[in-house]
Image 1 (cartoon, one colour):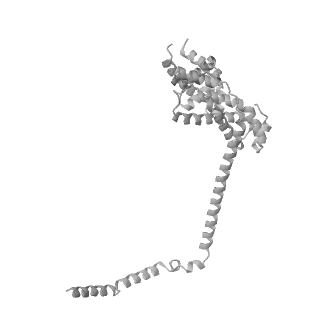
Image 2 (cartoon, each protein chain N blue to C red; image 1 turned 90 degrees about the horizontal axis):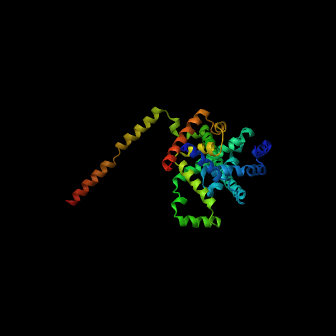
Image 3 (cartoon, rainbow over the protein chains, first blue to last red; image 1 turned 180 degrees about the vertical axis):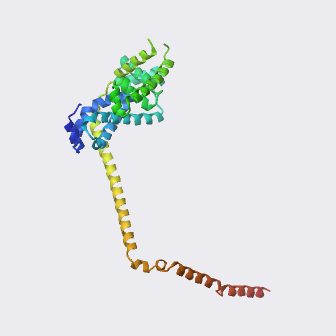
Length: 188
Length: 118
């Protein structure tokens, strides 16, 4: 836990300063998780604010401060899921759709210099995002939490309130689908 | 290297490529703006629903009182007369309609008009 139980209880009682402290303590972690779940840097902050907004209005429903982190993860998963669902309906412009010159110009505009490592990372993000696009938003989030975030099955069981075996089956199927997409996309 | 291992490697690279971004200086002010906007929205809807419930309760109460006062029923013969009495009154009204001499007069008028034309 990044905060004391007492702070959570105070925030539950309507103490805005306590809520502020909770946000400051968990902000970095939530931003990171969302960045990996949605893989669009420009929208990470918006989704994170939505998570804390939902936290603010649902904090009184939290029965025990011990399960706060699981609760927060659940809110994060739900907000990311809502975002991804909306995003699927919107046409997306990817860097890979642009010409080499346009990419260089975009890079130069973003960082002020031609950054090779930045481009490589962007390519990785796009590849994984495209691969995860071959599965449903729910499976995408589940697979990301397990394989990228490194959450254990026990953690996922608490977040999803689903039995471990059911999660294993779902994860296996999702990974198989991603593997098929990966196999058809890579030459090796 | 199998696809399975390659995929695992790619996902690890993805983790490194998606490091947590730093929050902008506007993060907290914008968050509080959103919270306040949502709060005022909720307050508005909460108040509106309270007003509606109060109005509905008041209307029910007024109607209840109106129905409960016996004096109000006297004004309506519908409630005081029995079914047979209502039928009898209705019957009388209908037969009165048929015995009106209005139709006879109008027929006569038509005949007079015809004679005038001839």
